[in-house]
Image (cartoon, rainbow, N blue to C red; front, side):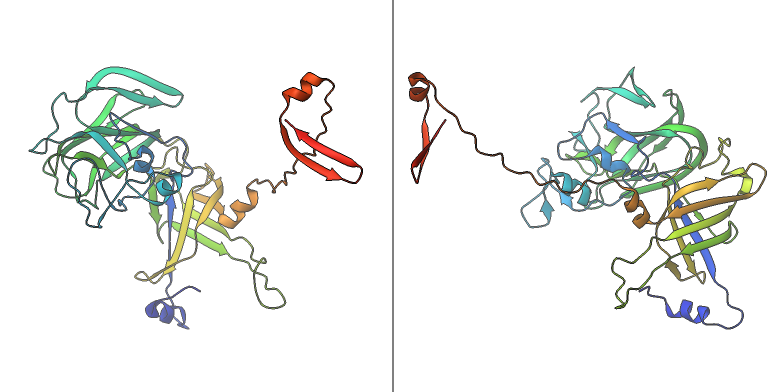
Amino acid sequence: MIVVPTALKNEIQKQRKRHLKARVRIDYSDANIDSTIIAWAGTVSRGSYLAQVYNGREDVSYKYACLDGKWVLDGTWVLSPETPAEQDAYEIGWRSVQFSNPDGTFQDGSSKHALFNRKLLGYTMLGGMVDAPHVSVNFIPRTISSVRVSFDNARMEYARDFDVVLYDIDNVELYRLQVTDNTGVKYVSAITTQYLVAQMTIRIYKWSHPGTSAKVAEVFTSVSELYNDKDILSLQVIENRELSDDGVPLGTTASGQIVLQLFNRFRRFDNTNTTSAIYNMIREGVRIRPEIGDGTNWVPLGVYFAKSWDIPRNDIVVTVSGVDRLALMAESEYKSNVIIEAPEDETYITDTTAEWEAGTETGVDYGTNVIRMAWS
């Protein structure tokens, strides 16, 4: 059952002058479908996980303890996630090995590490060395017009002075944002639009708290766009269901579908438009989240995943078709359970006295006119 706000319900029930609106958010670079994203860092503290800096989760799950002497056994601190299941369920992000000085800065030359750049088919080592804690994320070249970095909201720790550096695929620096006196656990800033960005690096020089490690929960790498009435030409959501005779729809629910037509404004959907914010991002599997409402109250219509794109060069209408997760499950391969049977007993006959004496009796079974002796 979908809960509808009273204002939206009244708008739907109007016989005349009914005005409903639609909007659709498309997540173009979800890490679950974008296998080209990879993270690396100068140092990685034990119990932290680089892959979490691009999984789309900006909030750290708990106040995680580390060997900085700042945590106490008061029930509010927990240990870092360890098992794969815990890593999927709980967010900790990346932590550096270096600890900050009493003034929050990091010791100059405390740890020098070679800088690596991930290209599409491998790694290239550079001669430059870096001192400050840093974490980088590499991805397919894309257009970036804003940066977003999330630090540790659970411990309320953050970088005060840091750089955000953008590189192209050949590790040529495209843009550097120098931040000083930051006071928040989440930093967001618009920047001059940069094209064909393949790497984002966060380099931290001063931390909010002394004597502890640098911590980053999320580095902005995703591309997500919201389309509203002026962008949407047509929206069709299909949800089929066939009830069984007893009225219980278990096992009879069909997968949902969506067909969305968008206005190709400024040819932003064209695959040849390298200046578009979604260049290289249009692919199968991107997440589509439609909503309807009155402009203030919105009701989600489900989550769908793109199956096909139709982007004609001689038309301004782009059509994307998608299905829900139920249809994707139908395409997944699985193997049924295989029953493993125990092998049959084997009979071993000793031919010589030496073989008899070399064996060890493991059991004796007495039956009618027969004695079975087990040896090993």
